[in-house]
Length: 397
Ligand code: PMT
Image (cartoon, rainbow, N blue to C red; front, side):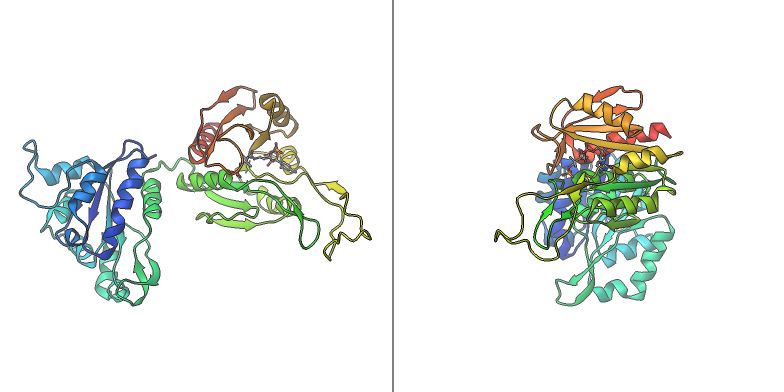
């Protein structure tokens, strides 16, 4: 979503300025064009050369000495930007914005701006909670400016509390969200993700290699596009996305019960999880010993419910998207699952291909629609694949 977008980064004076080059780097990796304006105070913390090198553009620091192409620089910068982000935003710059003061390049551009503005405050916790700053931030919110949260931590000054700037990745996610078309607004998604774990005894279990990355990418992308998302997640080490609700589960039966709770009120169910098809018939409360007295050479298994198939048969207006993890004949097997489970779409990945399937950050998938038409996609990140899947879901509404 950030590809070819014009992002203007305003950097003000504060120790968090050292993190701002990270924002430029991430934005450029996502294909955005970045220009930077620094206040005089910001230049005390990081040099303009750093931003110039990272953005591949001239850095603007002064009002009057950088007229290029006879442009009125502050107006052309304001017009150029699809979005302006101030990070870090000092109490001083926030106060200027709230009061319409234009006494340097950044505050002047802000006064001329018509694009969306995001502010990432960074300051001492007492400055942040000072009634003047609180009122200034409220004024900006009322004018449509998005004020990002701060983190609570031990601050550079040694005080503890809120006021630490968000990390560059979180800021770039916020920029991405702000620029994303909200074409899933009002839609409720239930997304299953990750592995399930079927315990044998207090030590051992049956599971699979799913990391949850595919399901989490879908959850993040759907939220960004305005959907309300319930994420039903098997055990993973991933950071929980900012969704309406996360339901942590362990077993396939847990996952089945969680989907049952949510199914009637959802518009879309995406089954990106890899639930175990079988579970041990019995669970041993004590660790099974290798002493010859207990039989540990075979574990009797019983089938788990096929969640996608069950809800495929029950669905009314819901869109049901399944995945298929295959190691060969993937299209043929996936078409079989599409029919058998009454899915509206299936995303098939051959887990033996390099860069596809479990754990990797990328995937190579074919998307098959209800009519059996196959769309084979190139290798892409799981985030990009999530967008491709959502684009097709939007067309089904
Ligand atoms: O989590 P990652 O590391 O990012 O890896 C992503 C992934 C490989 C797990 C994902 O891309 C994927 O392919 N998920 C489906 C894995 C799977 O269980 O495939 P399957 O072919 O066994 O099942 C077909 C469909 O039925 C799936 O939508 C599955 O969620 C569902 N199913 C399967 C078994 C079961 N008991 N109930 C189900 O609902």
